[in-house]
Every structure is written in structure tokens, then in C-alpha cells.
Length: 176
Image (tube, rainbow, N blue to C red; front, top):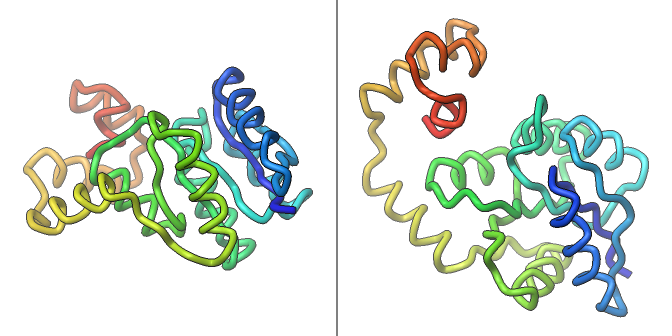
């Protein structure tokens, strides 16, 4: 039995994923937390085989939750399941320790296949994700705005403070 933790801030998404997974005789969802800090606590409580993790979760992001879980268990198998297609999101998630990155518009069969592959210890990368990583590798330099955001992060500013100071949204800060 592959035991899955499903982390997403939208109830309907969690319910849909649980329905997809419950159709598989060898899989079950152990818990479905909506926030990053609850994801870490649920991971500690249930020790799932595979964790599905959204990136936008409130105060503690999915990226922060991945880092916290991997800090507790270096062997944790985490699949990012998100709608964010940006190459920097993909790079950061994989660098934080996610096994792979799957977009929410993927087919249910792709999700099930990825869960099985990650459970088996593989790190499959869908072709569209690999294409974004390849494009990122071709242009590794930061833009002036990205460098500005990075300096503010290095100075200890939070995303909300950076957004206010630069007159951009918090989401744009996260992308940078």
C-alpha cells in the first residue's frame, strides 16, 4: 500500500486528488492538510510514503514545508503538484528536495504514475518541466529586479515588505 499525504490549500483539489488516489487498490490518502505547518505535523504523525505538495499554502509556503520535511527526513519523497509553471518555481522546488514537479492540469493517470515512480525511488521529470529547466539553464543570470529582490531577502526582509518597498505583488516577489 502506497500511503499518500496530500497538501493543498483548496478543499476541492484535496477531495479530487483523494478520489483519484482512492480508486487505486494499492494507494490511500492518510491526511489532507491545507497549510504548510500542518503538512509538516501530518508528515511527522503519519510518515507517508509519498507527499503531494502545493506551493501556495499561506504563512508557510509549500517550498518551506518541503525544506522542513526534508530536514526531518532526508528520504522523504515529495511531488510538487501545482499550477505554477515558472522555471524558477520548478528549480527551487527540486533544489529544496522535491522528487519531481507536476502541474495540476496533468491527467489523473500521470499523477498516479508519478506517485508510483517516486514511491519506487525514481525522480521522473515530465517533458514540459524538463523543457522549462533546460530553458532556465540556458539563461542563468538574474535580471536587475531579481537581483534587487535577492538583496532585500539577504538583508532579512520578508516577501510582504519587499513587495511594498518595490511596489509589486507578493506573488511577483516569490517568482523573483
